Image (cartoon, rainbow, N blue to C red):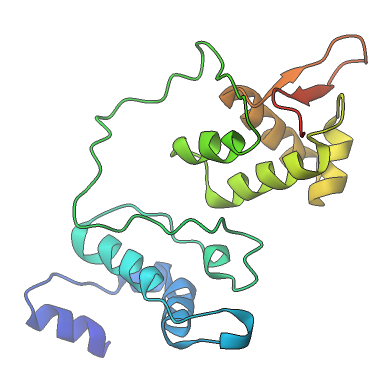
Length: 188
């Protein structure tokens, strides 16, 4: 409440709506801004508070997910989000995922490919990367393998497979039954 009043004195039109919708995120962002554990390599960071405030004050639509703040690092890549001053110019075009599939030639490119597609959430990116680490060297895998590796239910496993197919990371394998896939890039 005091923060909203302070923002109003600075000339911003702040309402309680974004705080009500994202109270847990804002609380955790404040904790991360003040928490450090040098033995574990965890340092204070204001990046999550800044993302929240950019949504509030600059009408940006950054995704606010608590899992991105998780200190274990399991749910995020080590890449720091770009929270510069300007808005990115994406031109309103959707990525062409129907055309030619990307040629994935090196195992680090899988991270680059999924990071280039803005519509994929950080959580899905991490799931794809975990799948690649576990199943990338197999000749083929199915939905049940995805369920086991990621500890998912059937529907969510199907959705992640569909997403990977749409962006060209996996392709169907013939001759091993319906619903078998392989990564277009094999682990080396």
